[in-house]
Length: 198
Image (cartoon, rainbow, N blue to C red):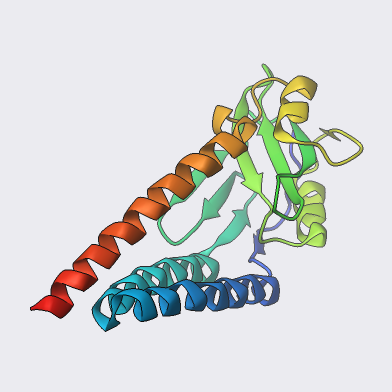
């Protein structure tokens, strides 16, 4: 049984989040400038607007995200979602540091019921290790997991059902994302070219 005494509220590490956001914004400047030079101001403005919207969405998530733990429930909140789970059926947790290609290791905490079903998953990407430590301590549930960082496929072998198919096939999805992004940029460029021709 859990032993939560008082409410615990954890917010993302804003410093780390804003650093990531800053790098993302700088990385967006070069493609936008290239579209501007290659296809004209209209295309550049459209491509820039798309990238600004994406950066704004990430910033909104960082600002609103938090984990709230009360004696009765745990709530994960983001800019566009809220997940709330009762602690009544929570009996143990699994904690794992998941590594993905071209991404920093991410602390993840899985809240499980008596049958091993996942009640809730806490992605620790934007939270510090100390924050996840505090959450585990406040929950007061038995905690296990791999002793070293693991890939999603290794975590699936360690405990089936914790990670999604998409996480286990990140490379394939990365290629698909690159194709879609290329198509979006191509459409943005065509719209920009049409706008400049008018």
